[in-house]
Amino acid sequence: MAFGNRLINTNAGGVDLIGSYLQGGIVTYVDPIDPTKGLVMALNNEPTTLQWLNTSYTNISTSDSMYYGSINTANIVANQGVGNYAAYNCTQRTDGGYTDWFLPSTDEIRTASANFDAVQAGLAANGGEAMQGFYHWSSVEVNQYSAKSYIITNGVYVAQGKTGSYRVRPFRVFQL
Image (tube, rainbow, N blue to C red; front, side, top):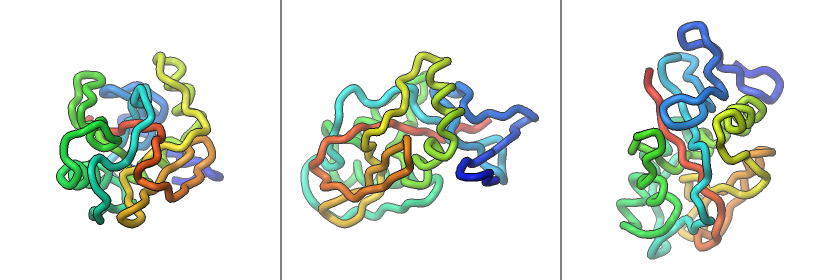
């Protein structure tokens, strides 16, 4: 449910989960149709800024939609292979013992912005890295040369060249 410019997703078992630590990260979204699932964001960015691509400029099938970040990430890694770049590094995370981290779609990363205050408080309470006004890669391609980046603190999207180095914050889907 929308309230002003903030998404208010209440209740999985009567408890508001947005901003809570759960399954390796901070809850940014609870599915309004199935409140036993949603999204968590890693407590910290990748330690360095990263490029979106690894090896070559190619067109990769991606979607902005909710729950497509993991599919987008798999498509990117299948196309670009093993290397030191945004999507691949997300797949290598093991925060909280979970190995299903991915580079979020734009709709997924938008949940952190929409619930900024609660997510920021959850990060602070759990020793996480505060969200800051820097560009973060999404898993969404614009064309073979650029992909969408996002400023979590204000919700601005910009197409950036895939060889630019920007911050990366992995997400994963939780299931209760």
